[in-house]
Image 1 (cartoon, rainbow, N blue to C red):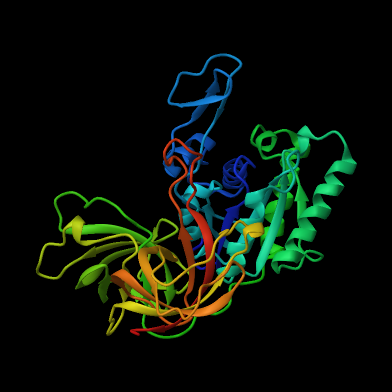
Image 2 (cartoon, rainbow, N blue to C red; image 1 turned 135 degrees about the vertical axis):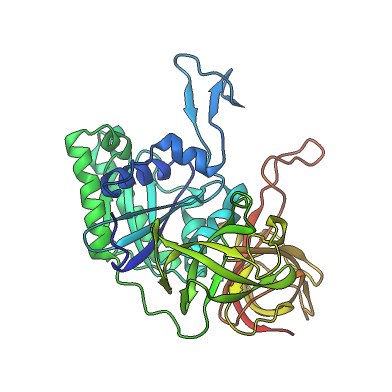
Length: 427
């Protein structure tokens, strides 16, 4: 079984869609999975991601759930950011498989918000793509500083000079967005072939697993203080008992069985009790900052209903006040970086992503319009109150989902408009 005493590191897999992120995740899990647990397949990860496969036929038109005919290509789209766990001899890993499509990038941002580092997957035949840049920019905006790169699908490239060119382009892109391109470790391999057990390609996954241990620095010490955890997911109440199963990463402090915490944000606050704790699927008495937890919570003397627990709420020790008014130091992305083409004016409404918490908000009190590339302090009025603290990273997204069309025109995407930091709450 995985040793819960090993240091824990959270890694998010990011990259352009169809680069093979889920296949890399499945290959790593097969290599490093707990000996007592079955390795997750690509199809199982697809199921956890929440999207049925897409079958391409009739001139490239996509039909979800259509039966596969010989010669057709079946692909899946990651919608959510499923979290899996595995361990090497030196570390425990929480691996977050993030979506690549713009339409679902808010879920990718939620995954990256709890990550210590990112694993950038680049398809070697396709090289650097539009979403490659946006994923890296958002990762920097969320405060991530450490990155590994895996050039996937190298089995489909016969020209070694092409691989050298792709690696050079990746390093230049890393430098442009604020990472250290010269020092970043870039590995070459083919995750699909590694899953099939083919010797040279399987060895590339061993190299990647070793690089996770040696290239990524230890997670910095978490700040001291009362425990803080944002709910990543909420599952159905177990059996007939008045308990709800929730998951999240402990950002601060320590947590013990029997502790009472404030459940705050979005709806009326309440007090809950931690009835059970799991880290890496092992029951523990005490959890520490950085642990990805599964918790059974209940409400003392009163039945806790599933409808009273929402993803994005916070579990906080001690006094916890929510707020709908915040100040943000906001930087808008340029159009060349995947951002807006037009300015933001007072009264602009968008989706604000604070890690696991998402909330619509209105920008108020602007003295001038903010053009793409500008940076300024903005005041935001949220639609519903959240528990927030100064220093938290935030993303601004706007636009419609990718499948929506306006009067028969081209699809609009819910793009990343900017990023920033919460500088004050309760304003």
